[in-house]
Length: 366
Ligand SMILES: *Cc1c(COP(=O)(O)O)cnc(C)c1O
Image 1: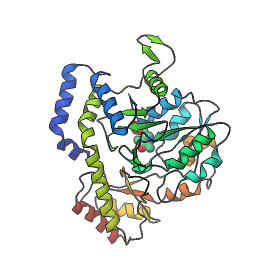
Image 2: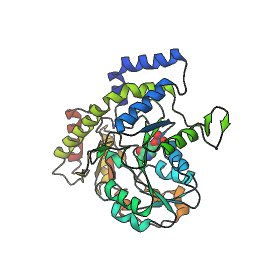
Image 3: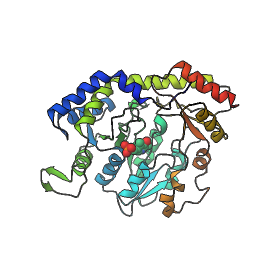
Image 4: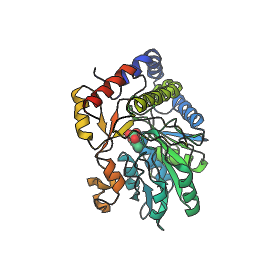
């Protein structure tokens, strides 16, 4: 039985009528940029996350960039983050001219190791940017405590974690500000690129909104140099149809994770660790084995979708060679990268599909 890593076509067919009609309405309205659907989506995401403001933008990478730029973070500043994430996290820091400072991760959740953060704070540090990796929140309590004591801002990279909770609050409402991505494969995905910033901070919200629209608040008057980073009405309309289904999809992801947790409990694979402080949304179900490459080959040969997350930690990427991190400088992340990979765990995956995945893994000797 072949099983894809993610089944976006099934998700479209499930909501086809509503999606097609929402798209048709935007086409007939001929209002493609901004407008009521984008405003409505902002209000819905703010309500969903529990924040005062939500500001739509072009994608998750630019959400991070706009936040940093609106905070005035730039040259000579440092931002502490994790090396075990998608490049976008650190790319945004570099794009405002600041220096990413990488701190090692926990070996079982793959989130930033909060106990190592304070030692990385210098007189140049302006912010900490934790990533809620694979949909489980980073340990925000102690992180916020360090930030408060050292006078730092905290920016959540919540791109993989819409709907996840920490201490009863949702990702997006856990720190000063957060970035979300609506890339199609994310837990809430559009039909292209899209992003959102959530915050309770009035000034930061209006700063991000202005920067995202060419530094404009009054049309054709520009008080600062901004960028073009807008969400279009088609994407907003699609996301408005999908948002009411998000909690159910996330519950289905958690259920699929629980099935693997049980079926793989007696194997040699390291299964994802779930912390008690909140509820994760399993953007990806990541397992770990020293035999990673051989197991991935076996899965691929059986028609089962899998992928390595993340094959190279950011501090060892060519693009960040200028930062000068030697091999062995962040040993936990470096040990994880050759061993971690994703199993299919999308909303709607059937028990038979999961059993087929497990059978292949067992035949490969896990
Ligand atoms: C997807 C992702 C981003 C970037 O989002 P885009 O919308 O693709 O720009 C940033 N950080 C993390 C952790 C992501 O997974």
